[in-house]
Length: 391
Image (tube, rainbow, N blue to C red):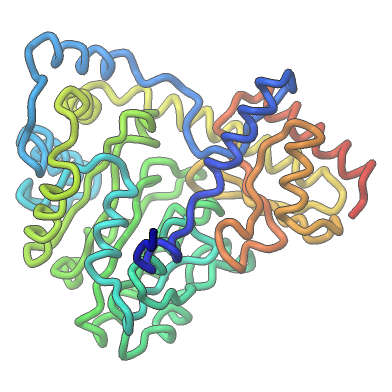
């Protein structure tokens, strides 16, 4: 059988491969500590779980509108207004089965042979994978340690060419935990006035996971780009709902119906009880969100201190998300080889930086979405391994 060439170009997210290998090792008796997968280690808050159960008992078993139930889309609009003082119509909200669906839809909408799409490097691996799948040319936006793992507006604008269709931005960022300052975003938005036909996808899935007094700057607050802005967000990270597969996107009027039609063709609608759970997440108590972020903050500080105590390893302090991206270039190890050996020899799962892009060499990603005890045990093993196995 011969498949179409698109499928020869599609990549994957190696965090799931590492998760699978960690499971095999654990099943074989190894004590595995997973600092690889990017999901909160907290349970979904009980009120959210109960809302889904109640929805099932109340008979919400069937299809919903492909765009999501109206009360949920209204709740998304209200939540964005409360947090960013910006108006978003429920008619521009599309509820989707997970955050990846928004990037899949947006990249599919703008990607084709002859077109360029800009994306962060290091960045979430599905960006590049989907760009290549469509036949478009991926153009990397460098995300540099010396810039606090934020993108540079000047550097990004210089990458825009006559074939640029879409720019993908991510702040707070995966895998680096960087936050792009408002002044830099202001510069980028001002510069984009010269490129009115270039669309923007802003991945804001970690928008409530910030530290040290940082405030998220949503691109929704820039009216001059709203007619070409797509925003990716959802419930997975903020409410510890990764397995519920729930996300939402904001689309400008001229793109919304195309996204809706793709939903009808691909997944019909998001499952009904999960939507009622998401409604409760947005409209119910927010205490659990603050408590979770406070625990991440404490772990973040501990992770950075412990990593910087390992000879050959240095780590700047991440400002958002729940990832550290330590520089391991002075250990003598290549990043992916080090990540592999840490898992196979010590039972510590991490992700090699090159899995997030070519500029990820020399780094590994560590998720501190694990208990403080496990983080300390894992980093102790890492320190001992590097002492015994200089690269």
